[in-house]
Length: 137
Image (cartoon, rainbow, N blue to C red; front, side, top):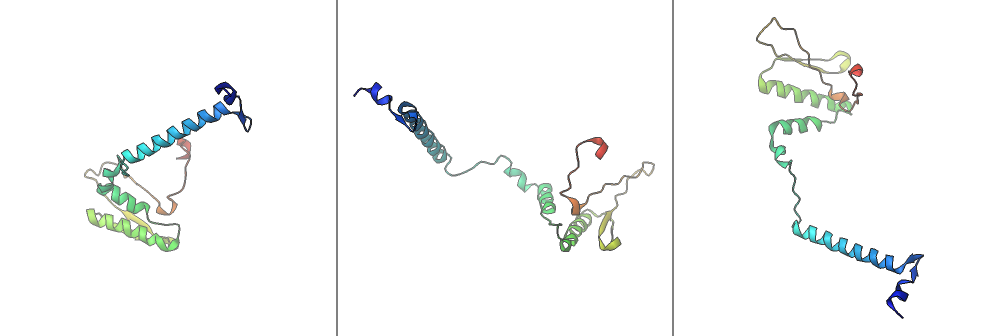
């Protein structure tokens, strides 16, 4: 029996030659994967890891971890903002119409001729999605 006769056999309607090529490619991929895993020594490199030490990132992560989907955790969010206002010396007030707390901090500018500015955020609706079209803002 010659090589050409052997390659004329079929496995599950796939020519034997094709099966052998696929097998060789799979073995090469497995060896490549093993080589890559061993060359990394099990360590993954995260190019953004150094940002985790940034105080602003740590505060933002702390803020995002507050689960306000439960009513009993809303006060935790208010406490977060109270702590931030106290840290920088901002006067603040907490109002609770209908039993829902509203935290208001005031930062006075140096020139009273400028108009007032209001920055608002709602921790209770942090997962709300707004379409990215100006008419919906």
